[in-house]
Length: 157
Image 1: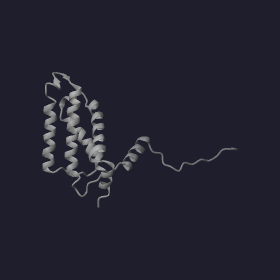
Image 2: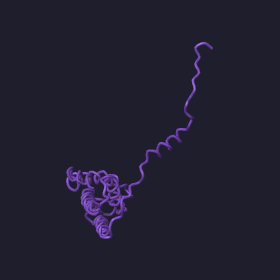
Image 3: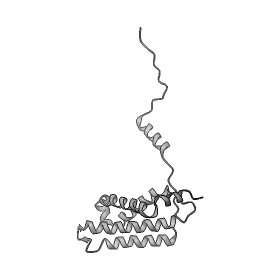
Image 4: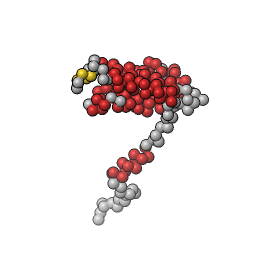
């Protein structure tokens, strides 16, 4: 056959689902090993979560099935900052503190705030989640983790 070429594949034929699995495994980072909070910090955190739960039952926020979104958002934003402060005040004292922990601290804090109010989990706390994420980011930038402070945390021995 004139003009025909012999093409050989150098790769093994692997199903796309196996390639995705293999790729996912090789790109996954090991979970962060953030130490547990001290008993004192845990107690303070629990007090704030209890306050969230109690406040969300307040008649000015919850009236039957209706939820005053403005008041609920105010309570949740205030409490998420309180919990972040408790966690960061403890974790920053640890020699092994790593700024890489911040994403996980933010995620677990927001989850805890939303999950401590059963009503929010029923209606999906997503409308609150984005507001709480913005609040935490603003708090990081405006308070605990200003750029200079962040550099000092990263340069710790």
